[in-house]
Image (cartoon, rainbow, N blue to C red; front, side):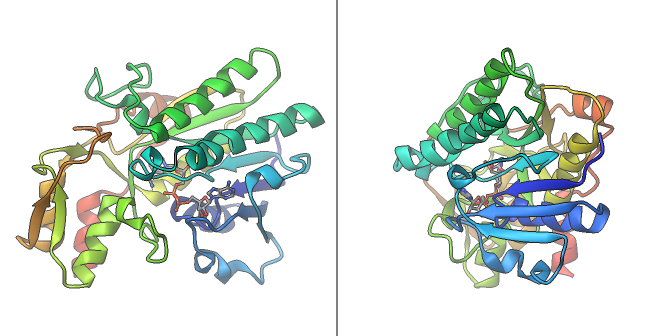
Length: 306
Ligand SMILES: NC(=O)c1ccc[n+]([C@@H]2O[C@H](COP(=O)([O-])OP(=O)(O)OC[C@H]3O[C@@H](n4cnc5c(N)ncnc54)[C@H](O)[C@@H]3O)[C@@H](O)[C@H]2O)c1
């Protein structure tokens, strides 16, 4: 399949804007981006505003009328924070599930099925029954957010039994990298922990570790996520499957805090709905898409510290 034009939803967000830069540099595709700016920032994409190959539309996914012009849709738009998803449940349900289903309905309406690369989440594994965790591990959603991400995966699977959907779900583990912390986002206290820690360090504040800090995370760099999206898009056959995207190694939050800010940290209360460990088994994505992570968290932090 030749790819001419793609859509990125959630293009102003942390991962969406990094994906935009990656695709802009590594392909000659025309790229449309949509975002309602609920958590993202226009600053993340304005450096490409004068480029003919990129168009930005400030709108919600549910206001899209057709996907007919696209060969691939990278669907990243979401309200991606675990803790707020317990409070404004309907708002999260709308952003994470209903607006995603709208994309499927547009495909059915037009009988046009661009490849859909969906940003899923390792949060669907909750307390994993297998470590490292393969894609067929038990699903154990501990939060509304995780459940909404999983529900959409399930809709893709169910609807593809009836209509010719062409989709890949990428279950990201714990992303880190530039733009992970948006200071203007009211929910940024719950954004990626690496971004929160770096922001507190820059402000001269103590890092705050939830619980005892022994919880382990598998941190994956945003450029490696962008490449996983790209490889999913160009894979020539229909897969309709799910891939883990992680480093395949873990470090504890305590180790991360020490790496970033020495002994300048304090402990705060543990949060419900968050797993004790995320640890990706990345055999499947490596074997099928040929994807491998290239950037380790310690190298990223060391570079920032030098
Ligand atoms: N960052 C993480 O820790 C993480 C982990 C696993 C999965 N993910 C998934 O990756 C994707 C991107 O996450 P991120 O970290 O870049 O988050 P982000 O909040 O930085 O980006 C999400 C973007 O979507 C936009 N958006 C939200 N609802 C929208 C709607 N209805 N219509 C149009 N735009 C909308 C927001 O304004 C924002 O720019 C999400 O789907 C998220 O669930 C993120």
